[in-house]
Each structure stands twice: as structure tokens, then as C-alpha cells.
Length: 478
Image 1 (tube, rainbow, N blue to C red):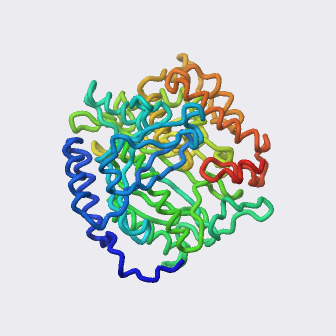
Image 2 (cartoon, rainbow, N blue to C red):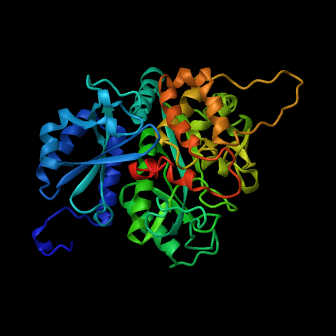
Image 3 (spheres, one colour):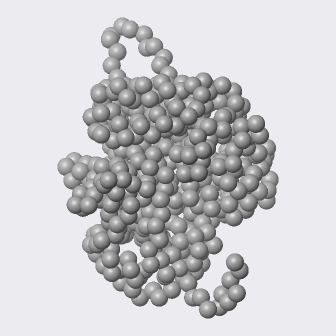
């Protein structure tokens, strides 16, 4: 229905330049400010700013779906100590018999929004999911990751930094994933790649619009470009604290989907939506810092890395097969791990070989890091980084008896192999607890609805039952 009298409305709409200033200031406060003081500051701002109508609270379920609830501003300010929702309606959360869960606002996570993407009069904040007794809910991995990095900082004065490189595809039509037909497949909007996309074609206009919105949201954009495959894109943003990096992944995907929808297209983060061309990854860069110093760096270390960084790498390599289901969480993800298309499916580390699951980018004392290339763009970022950190810091190192030759190992080739290794892993049980069985149950349900052999054709079942795509209608059609 068309708005017949828009002049009656006075919702907050802020220019992109001003939004960027506000969000960059909020980022700085998030890193250095006192949480209680920030809550007071933002409460006062919301009370004074009359043109804000609603606050969008965000959280992520165990599989990685992004959920948003809009709260009336006045109601939220009066009732924020008792915000509840029905956890049984969220796949991967509570059972019907224990449905009530609470939301606790992370006031430091505020993001001021471009109104042409999100609508006027709204801001976004992230929330922690709590049990009825206000304890941290075990399947909310944003909370679990946040608690883990807080303990690292308190006990060892270690901070964790990360930056993702999340790729996606732009395809024809709105809702192209939900209406996917394997006999037709997705229709690419461009056959260009890195160097063949024209400045004002639809791919470039989509990239420009998405990058402008993210820049205004304080992402600290670095480069925005088409990727190797036709209709593929990647928008890179700055290195930051690990929980905020995960928040940005979720907002990045949301912005891209909304911009594409506004343009009559679909932005998809399926790892391999089209057979025969390169898939999409979420190369995950990570490093640790202490006393303001990058402790993954050592000038005279092998490939410029410290013993701590190499220890981290060897633990990741040792446990790679067991944790693969977390980093590659869908049936479709295993199409991407195909060695014919620059796939990072080799369980090894290399500064140059892009077929390695871990790469060591060229760096210095500021930029030294490791890049985990095997992470798929549909992984739950909080669960993935939580698992990576736990593995790199608490796992067992890969060792080889002296004199033996290294045998090249590969990541699982199908979700069924990944499920089997995940299911029987004592290490996964140790780091995930009862979440292992909960997560496993959802992965098995999707796998059971798909053929055991991937074959050369992308199947309808691996798309419509995908955790980022399925809904009640699709799921109950099976």
C-alpha cells in the first residue's frame, strides 16, 4: 500500500557521511568504553531522539541464521530487564516444554542505520540470549564467544582480532533460493569476473550500493570488487575485535541481501550455487595480541610467525577433520571443497599454496596473522570462531615421528563423512558439550533429505533445506 501522506512522518534519516562519523565513534567507544557508561549514554540518546521509532535486536541461532526483533523504543527503555521470546520457535534453541528465553541488550554494539536499506527511524543492537534464570544460554554462540574472549583477556591479557573475506553470488530474481529448481538452476546476472565487469553493470551497481551502506555503518571498508567467478562479489572490511567481526559478517550478509532484493535480484551465500565454476569462501584471518603487541609475529620466526602462532596452526591441522562440520556446515559446502576450483581442502599450511586449508599471508609486526581458508560463507561465524579459538589454544598439536614423510591429508569430501568424524570426536565433545548433539541433529536432518553422492548437478534438496534458506513451508513439504 502506498504511503498517502508521508509528510506526517518524522522518522530518523541520517546522511551517509554523518552515519559513518557516528558509527566510527560508536566503534571506538565499543573497544575502549565502560559498558555501564555506554548504556547510560545510549539510553539518554534514545530518550532525547524523538524520531527513532524502534530498536532492532539481533541474535543468531546455533546453525547461523540471523534473527531480528523490532521493539518499540518506549517499551524497550521501560522493559529491557524483562525482554523474552519464544525459544521453541527458533530451530536449534529450546524445546516446546521450556520455550521462554530472555534477551539482554549489548548496549555497546549499537549501529546507526541507513534508512534506504533498513527504513527510517531504526537502530540495531545485538543481544545475548539468556535462560529464564538469566544465565548465559549455551546454544547462543555470540554469548559463548564473548565469554571466552573475556576470560582470555582477564586471565592472560590476550585480545583476539579477526577479519573475514566473505564471498557471495548475485543471481537473477527475488527469492531465487527458495524457488530453486535443479532442472533450471540459478541464472547469473553477469558473465564477467575480476576484470570483465563494466563500471555500471548490475554487479558493479550492487557492489557500490552495498559498500556505501557498509561504509556508512562503520565497517571500515578496504576493497570492494567482483571475484574470480562470474556474478561473484567480495567486500572486505577492517580487522577488528573478534565478536565485532562476527557481528559485521551477519550485518554484511543482511545488507547484501537487502540491496539485491531492492534491485530485483538475490545475493546468495551458498558455498557452491553453480557447478563448474569457483565457489564462495569466507577466508577467516585471525591473530592474538597482548599489551598492544601482535603475539603471532616474530621477525626471525618461520614465515614471520611466532612459536605461539605455529602451535595454533598445528592444533588446527590436527583437529581439522573433526571440526570440519562447523566450518563447512551444509551439504552444498562440500561441493566447494573440490580441488579443481582452487579449493582449500588440503590439511596443510602454506604461505603460497591456495589449496591449503591454512595460509600464511605476507605480514609484518602489525599485520601478521593466519588465514583459515576452508571456512564456508554459510557457517555460523560465532560458532566457527569459537571452535577455531578453542582448537588453536586447547587442542593437541599435529606431530609426526622423526624420519617419516608427510602424508597429504584432505578434508571430508561430503557432509556424511564430516558428520561421522564430528559425531565420534572426543575433542568436539570437550569443546562443545551437549551442543555437539544438538548441532549434529540438525545437520543429519538436512543430510538425510539429500542424496549421498553430490554428483555434478546441484540438487534442489541441498538448496531449499539449507539452514539459511528453509522455512516452515519448504521444510514441511518433504
